[in-house]
Length: 152
Ligand code: 4NP
Image (cartoon, rainbow, N blue to C red; front, top):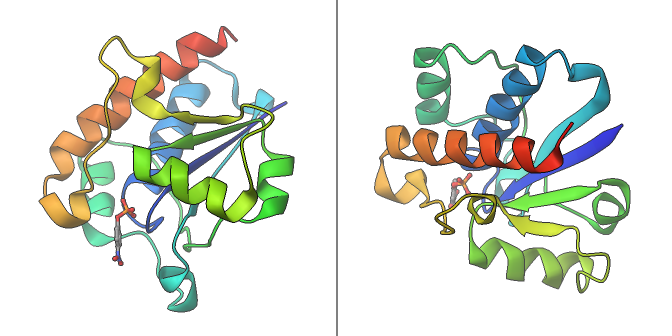
């Protein structure tokens, strides 16, 4: 069993998008039983406000036929660092923020999603850019590269 936690700032746009895109890729390969997949935030405000997946992310997941269920934002905590095998961040800032919450990455579990691709870069936050299509393309590219990296 591989435990994967996708992480972004708010856990209502990019990381739930990655969670459900990756979940479908794994299901399409018949590998669902080998994975536990979840997502979390570095900030706490969306958890405090009990926010679910943002409208723009819901709409793009529907448009791309990616199944999803409700997911409520929650902030990453130390037990997540201990529990998950891979903690997959969307940008550099997430990596710094995760370590400020869970401590230094002594077990080298924290990675940036697009670092698994031939073109390492951050995934821009669609909460600010409004571009959910671009975000989806980046998330898809990263999830494919990450799954290939895992060689399952
Ligand atoms: P995410 O985007 O990190 O991709 O979920 C954001 C969503 C909400 C906020 C910031 C980023 N916010 O400030 O509420």
